[in-house]
Image (cartoon, rainbow, N blue to C red; front, side):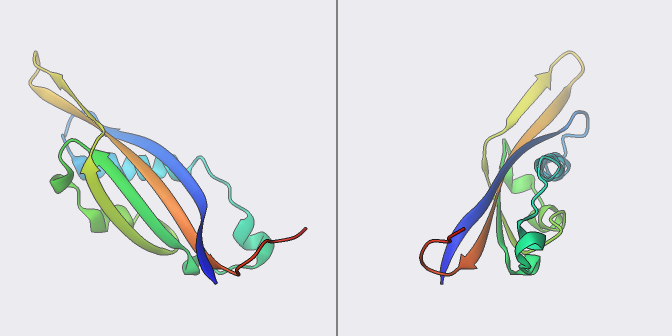
Length: 119
């Protein structure tokens, strides 16, 4: 058996007024998830909980992201979240606010049999 990436989704999310990096990251996860309709699991009778899910979050202040809260947004699998510098902060100096934009990449892996699948 070999662990193979089977899904890659990207998303963006924001918090316009609260400068909440976790909220922006959670919204980015929702954005990524809502771009998908993956029938693989149902069609092949694969247990979704066996997925290994890795979430990469890019924000300007990665230390302010609650990774456990972000992981809780994923409905299936064994989820890990890592943060790194990325995303974008938009400063409104007139009003003294910062809008936070987060980006995420969600990769899902399954332990699959070695060799090729045939149709």
